[in-house]
Image 1 (cartoon, rainbow, N blue to C red):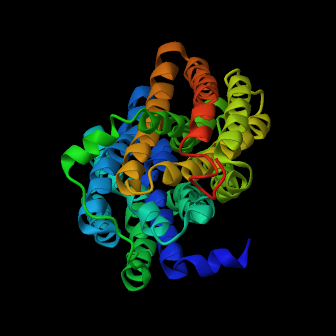
Image 2 (cartoon, rainbow, N blue to C red; image 1 turned 30 degrees about the vertical axis):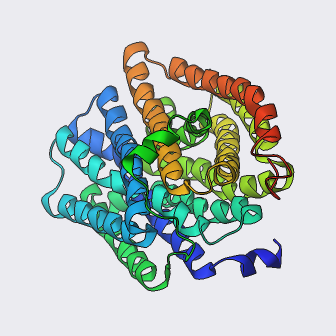
Length: 403
């Protein structure tokens, strides 16, 4: 990585954004790795399991709009402070009072949605410090907080076996508290903060068709990533009769692949352009999801398909956010909220539909095939807009960055 990148922005804020995002994502998907144990104790149906793990994803998606607005109104650092306090309070309440019904799990899921909304804060907090030619790398590093989902899958099931799944909520408060302290001390708002926008200006962005394209593209890459991250522990448990701990390890391996390569996706997009990167990622994802839908004979073969699926989706996440700040530099706060919301809605759809499809048909195939179809649609859509994007806002006259 060029040394010019580290001189261009504010490294303590970049790293604070990463840690805040990382730990937020860890608790955002916490119900997924614990789902096998919670569902056993509360006697949940496959559809209820699907809805339980999908609720934080949907809540996080919708709250990203609220947090995106808050970022523009009171600046990213203050918005992030409020979000972290709500998440800590939600987990503390769940730990002290327990989850005794399906409805309780949904209420906790809504509280954890604020952790998923961290995306709409952490990315503008980091982005505003960096020039256009370093956006892919900066947002790739901040966005690598996706890796928090690895920690949830890796540690939550085994901690639940050792201490009971309810105590995992209490244990999660320890790293959350440490990161909150680091965030308060080291994160700083960029002096180049755009002025707050009125509600009518937010609505005006939705009249721009490019905003809708970005929302759709991210609903496939990030939606696929977080939807699978939330569902894979159940998937491995159902299909291969793996215990919650081993299923959690398999999920962690898949999620780690998708998180690790997000910055690589951003860097590749900086080098060859976000459009070219995304076209390759969607095509590969569609093929791999099609193969995955048939169900592999062993969990090892399943891993050989799902790990690359998560990797290409992760790189796609980085590539989308190489393009967004170039097109919507002045509206990056609200666009991060809108695009992030769309990604979360995609994740909710995937996680919830897998549960319902399994209950209705006894198989996950239709749910996975439909998502493969969305990747094909994204490829077709991107092919349709690429020439206009490259000759208008992405032309060499307008930007030093590659589109």
